[in-house]
Length: 286
Image 1 (cartoon, one colour):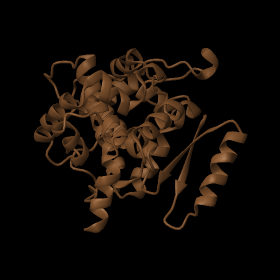
Image 2 (cartoon, rainbow, N blue to C red; image 1 turned 180 degrees about the vertical axis):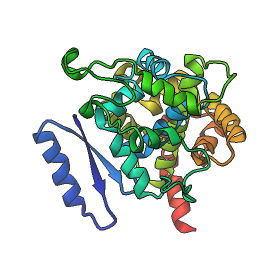
Image 3 (cartoon, rainbow, N blue to C red; image 1 turned 60 degrees about the vertical axis):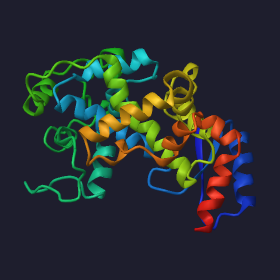
C-alpha cells in the first residue's frame, strides 16, 4: 500500500510532522497529514461503507456478487466483500466487539447502532468464516484454484443471508447501491473537513486513491461529489436517506455540505476562496 496517514496529535510539533513527511517520501510512500479521531480519515469513512453494503443483503435488495459487481463496474479495485475477505472478517468483527456492538450469550447489545448488520457478526461467530486465510468468507476459496484467491460463490453464505433477508423487495440497480453506500462516505468526508481531521478535500481524495482502491480517473470521493455528481444532488439524496433512516448519523447532512450548496460552490472552490479558514476562525472565537 502506498498510503501512510501521518496522524497529528494535539501535542505533535511541526518539526515531527515535517520529518514524517520527508520519511514517507524516502521510502516511496504517499504521506497525508490527518487529525486524530477514531479511524483517522480512511477507516472513518469506511464505517458506513461496510455497514451499508452488508445491510443491502439484509434488506433483500442485493446479493454478495451483485454488490461487488456494482462497485467493480464503478471502478473500485476490489468489491466490498472481496476486500473484506482479503483483509479478514475477524478484523471488523473484533472492532465491533471492542465498541460493544456485538451481541453475546444471546443478549442483544444496547450500544450498537439502530441499523446494524447482524449477519456480519454471525458469519464470523457462528460460521467461522474469516476470509481468504481460512478458505471461506463471504466467498469460498479453493487453494487449487487461482492460488486460493479466486472468489467462488458460497451456498452456505447464500443460505445464511436468506435467514436475514426481507422477502418481496425489488433488487436495487447499480446506481441505487452506489448512492446508498458512497454518499454517506462523502458526507463523512465533509464532517472530517468541518472538524479539521482533514485539512483540505484533496487530502481525502489522496487517501482513497492510494489506500482504498478508489478509481483514479474519478479523482477521489470529494472530487467525484464535486464534479461528477454535484453537491446539490448529494445533499438532496442524503436528506432523503436521513428521512428514511432518521437514527443513522452518517446520513445526516453535514453543515459544511449544506453551506456549499447554499453558496452554490463546490467544496474545492470553498477552500480555494479561503472560506474554510474564515469559518474555522469564527468558530475558534465562540
